[in-house]
Length: 377
Ligand code: PLP
Ligand code: MN
Image 1 (cartoon, rainbow, N blue to C red):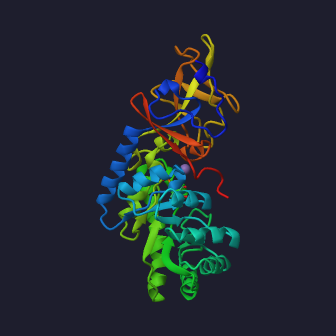
Image 2 (image 1 turned 135 degrees about the vertical axis):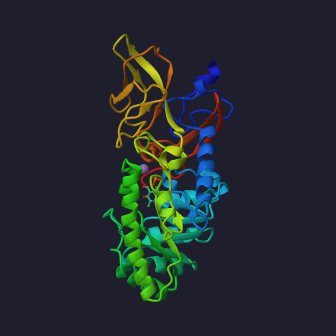
Image 3 (image 1 turned 180 degrees about the vertical axis):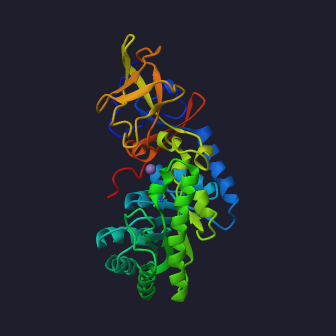
């Protein structure tokens, strides 16, 4: 017992390979490895139907190079990142091809991005001419080439130039700059991923395809090649892939799934399994009334709804504060019991943890660092 009486410093592993599940310090982020491999295989098989469409999974879901490497081993051509920190962590972890599907702003950050291009093929989204020129300046400074992908606003009204000739104008600027290589366009609408009915998601993607086609017509008219057309997430990637317009898709959440994706109906979402859990411990029981677990809002993100309790569809979780979760009805749980929570939203939940514990059966098989975590400075 004296061996166990050491304190766990912040950032230390919650368990080690070979431990049993009951040895894991909670709250902990846990992935079921059998389910994870099933999801990886399902995605590989699903993409084979589309032939010439590449899979570039989004690393924002896991921020973990070990999972990115598994995705590459299951057919991915590379990884998307949303932040510079994610990209740095992926390159440090051995990933050789990255699209930052977002804007990186300012010379200091762009110099860091360009430095990555010494070890990997790096491209980045742009929607602004001055920023594009700074991307090129950073690349020239590091004696590398950065790929640039013009982001087009296909309905999310977030980033991106408007569909049509604006994208061509930016591509023309890129072609004149010596630090960058124009790669194509990104046409992603995140709002479509969580439209509940499959038919409605399909119709929403048809609008995305129309805007993308319109933009490609302008490229053709301008005599400019647009090799890459990328977009789509877990909720819609099959529709983009089937469009014959997109040649790359970016699903992220499919590796883990979450309770919110569980509320989407139909294909392709329902083919994938919930594999991500927050493992929590019962810390208090008020007989006949409630059970309290040690996972509150600092252990599981609540932005897309409360977590579900695995295999207990009638039990509801309510947040009891930063460190507490309250379960109703109280069932037969006792203090010290483990409770598996299915997070409402996988990406921001992962972001709360330093380590991802991979389990198979009742044993710990992997403890992977989430090196890309954080807001992404
Ligand atoms: N591509 C981009 C640009 C995104 O922002 C996201 C997620 O927000 C994804 C792909 C992946 O989406 P999902 O996790 O829903 O598959
Ligand atoms: Mn998400």
